[in-house]
Amino acid sequence: MQSAAATSPSQAGGSLGASLVVLACGVFWGFYWLPVRALDDLGLTGPLGTAAIAAAAAILLVPSALAGRRRLWQCPPVVLLSVALGGAAFALYSVGLVYGRVAIIVLLYFLTPVWSTLIARFVLGWETTRMRLLAMAVGLTGLAVMLGAGGQAPLPQGAGEWMSLIAGLLWSVSTTGIRVRSALAPTETSFVFALGAALTALALWPFLPAAPLSSDPAEAWRIVAIALGTAALWWVLSILGLMWAVARLEPARVGILLMAEVLVGSVTAAVLAGEHLSPAEIAGGVLVLLAGLIEIASDRRGRVVKA
Image (cartoon, rainbow, N blue to C red):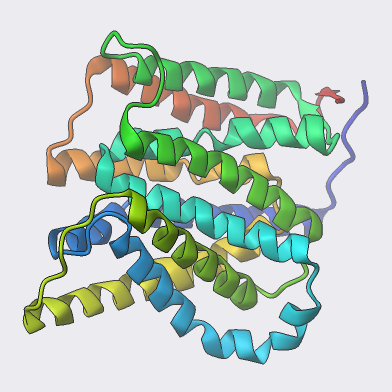
C-alpha cells in the first residue's frame, strides 16, 4: 500500500490540456461513421473505404515524415511497432463500423480502460487506484448488460463486433507503448499510425466481401473527395492532437475520455441511421459512461493497489 505522488501545478495544467484535447477528439470521432458508410455506399465496401482514408492520410503526412526522417530512422523498433499497432486498432474499428451497429461497435471498442488498467497494473507494475478498479468493474458490467440484452451470451456477435473488441485491446497496448517509450513528434507518429492502418485494412481485404468498384467518373471524384476530407479532418488533425495527448496521459484515462464518442456515436446513429437501442442496451451504455465518470472523479492521491 502506497500513496501516489503529488502532482505539480505545471503537470496538472499539462494534464488538463491533454485531457481536453482527448475529450474533443472523442466527440469528433462520434461522427466518423458517416464518411465511412458513405464510402461503403459509393462502392468502397468492407475494408476498402478505411484503406483509402488511411492511405490518403499517410500521403498527406509524407512531407512531415520526410522532415523527421532522421528521428524515424533512429527510433527504436518497439516504438514504431506501438504506433503502427495503434493504426491497426483504428483500422479494425473503422472497418467494424461497416459490419455492425454503431453504438455497439463503439462501446465494444471502449473496453480500452479495462485493458489499459490491467496492462498498467500487471505488466508494467504501475499503481492503480481503487476508484479506477471500481470504474473497470462498472464498465465491464455495462458491456455485459449491453451484449446480453437480447438474451444471448454476453459475447460479440458478427465480424464487426469482434473486430471492435480486438481493436480496443490493440489500442490499449499501443497507447501504453507510446507513453512509455515514444520520443517521436506528433506528425511523425501520425504518419506511422496512418501507414499501419492502411496496411491493416488492405490485409483484411481478401478475408471480407467487397463489391466491384464503380467505373462512374462522378462517383470516383466523390470517393476521392470524401477519402481526402476524412483523412485530413479525422486522421491528420484529430490524430495529431490525440498522439500529442496520449504521450502525456495514463492509458486508462485516454480510453475513458474518448468515451465521449460513445454518446455522440449512439445519438447520431439513432437520429440519422435509425439504429435504436433497447432499454437494456441503454442501461448498459449508461453504466459504461458511469465508469468513465467514476474514474475521472477519482482522487489520484488516494489509496492505490500495487501489482
